Amino acid sequence: MKAQHLDAFNTPYTLRSVPLPKLTSPHDLLVRVDAASYCHTDAVLASGQMSPLPPSFPHISSHEFAGTVVSLPPSPSPETPKYPIGTRLGIPGRSYHPCTTCSECSSSPSPSPSPSPSPSPSPSPSPSPFPSPSPSTTQHDKGDPPGYSVYCPSALNLGISAPGGFAQYAVVDARQVAPLPGEISSVDGAALMCAGLTIYAALRKCGLEKGKRVGIVGCGGGLGHLGLQFAAAMGLRVLGVENGDGPLEVARGLADGLKGKGRGELRVVDARVEGWEGVKEGLGREDGRREKGEMGVDAVVVLPESQAAFDCGMGLLRNHGKCVVVSFPERGFRFSARDVVFRDVQIVGSLVGSNVMLREMLAFAAEHGIRPSVRTFPLKRLNELVEEYHKGRGGKLVVDMHMDE
Image (cartoon, rainbow, N blue to C red; front, side, top):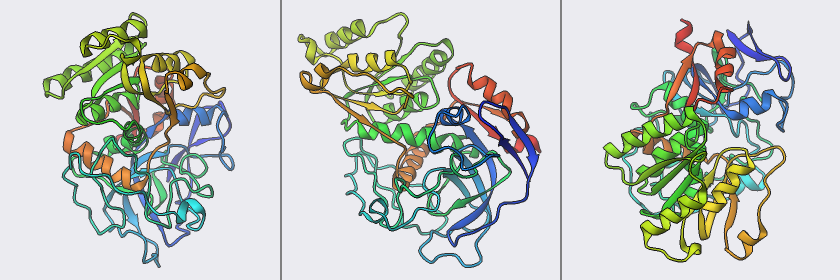
């Protein structure tokens, strides 16, 4: 098979032929990769700024991809979900071969949230131990059944600490994947495996009921433009913030389309033109609030890795609000103790989501027509894709394996 390899940090990928990977576990599946998405984490890893680092070079990146099952283990585990050959799967990189016994793996799942509202679950090709609870932003459910956890410290991560999706074939763990609904293409499904799941989980962690205000700072990027769609479909009043021409174009195009579907209030602002102070006061006037502490959004998701973006998000929050941080700049963020103490603002982090939430996200996306804005490239042009990524034009960039045929 052919695969793109990272041979050293800060170097281009190299395409070459390698043997097919082998199944080494009763939980393994061999999939033909149909599409593989490029994530900011791939850029961070390639620059040598991420831990854990690849175990060795050469390394195959991409931790968000989609594929079709082509081979099963000779002696599959009876506890593992069964996927017949030909099943299309969405494959997030996290939790490949978890230990099953640590405190993360052995803990019980948190209670399922009450319906609010309930999407129509997409049919699964086989029974699965991972149910699909109804989405609700009022509770962040991160639990999978005991024996598997995306937070297992011993697990590998495809595309980060193990070979990923920038290859024609890959070995995946049947416990970490989810069947793709028929309404979602492999290209779109690949982009949803990290970007979609991560922003969906972050919005759930905001803990907001319908009609509440949420801000998304960095709303035109890979996660942000999906967040606009998810938040609107959840019935939230959405404020998107951007500061680049390309991402603004993506976000505003989505906002116009969502308004036409009657999804409620959704506004996108250019941070270069409108400061957070003026935006916050405008929201206060709309809500009939006179005190500054009462003005602003109820929760905000911060996606860019800049201090200015974090400050903007914190500034937009009303008192008792919540700031959900998804990005991880190398030097971290500075925050004001006054915001935390005197304004009672919470700052929490959010990292991807459980397999339970992955299935919930896919069902929700299928029902509400949530799709990524993508540009596709063949596998042989991965380095051109990377060049495009660094231009910061917004949306998602995806390798479509069928373009090489």
